[in-house]
Length: 441
Image (cartoon, rainbow, N blue to C red; front, side, top):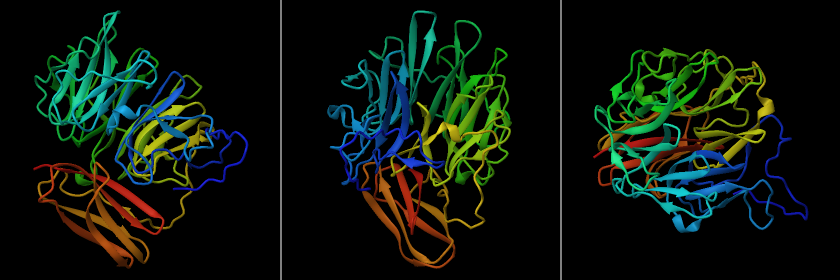
């Protein structure tokens, strides 16, 4: 962890005068920063994993004024609900959190100071990967939770009780949820799955239909949606990973999922993992994608993408805008930020022409017992590759030796370990890259 020299003045953590590069906010390093959300002018991050050097599991709030008594711009909001959190979401004045363990959802009405467990009816010991809120008429809101391996659950009483709603949902590995208004007092709900593509429901989850026309991969990573300015909605979906064999990317639907069109210029062999958007000041919207290779921006509804990665090229699991900065949650290194003022039309990152190290996605993924991991080393040096579980424990050391420039392959046999999500971390010199592995027994 970076050391600080403390001086007797107030230090502002937002650093809005930062030069044109990404800056580490010294957040919950050692964790997977899965979700970022802003409510009541406060920024929260939900994180998984634990390391000895920093308690990185839980929900943290960003301190806009630096406290010289702690070496971070973040502090945990409530130590009584220590868990690994896969998702954060807001509805009105309330903050919601879904866990990696126990299949639990929590609600806070006071910006995270205290939490209520609202998990009655949810399956135990499952991952709550996503949450969404759909208005019902003008005076109520339904809550939807995507549960890995169990489908979608719905609450019509603010989380007091939950009911499974998965008729027609032929793939229950739900990874993302979103909803868009349909022009009446109702909304259309979308569920993204791992391997089954996109499913749509027009009746609050009672029934689902697959809507994958035009998608060339069915591994869904994230959704984004915003008004197209003419009464409709641009709906984006990010699909694919390295197990897809070069397929996948970002796709756009202008007809509520009936058909999809690839919008990948500038994203060749890049797989988006998260989205956010913001008005561009000219009546339109800029779309920002966090990917396995950093952050990319589109100024024209995804038709073209430019890298936004100076000093920063690692997998981005979450993105949000807070104040005058864009924040990015990453694996193992916390939360980074960069001024929005850097996002000028046509911005790009200069290309150095220097080949890069690279960790490819394991194949197959998900896998049973064994999987193959390919990686590239661009200069001689010590290379390490470790497998880490969701609690931050190292479960396998696959590589730890000198390597010369070249392409390599290693097989990992996970027999004897529990099924679930693991992370592969490649390091050489100052380079570090991480991928997510799914072990299904």
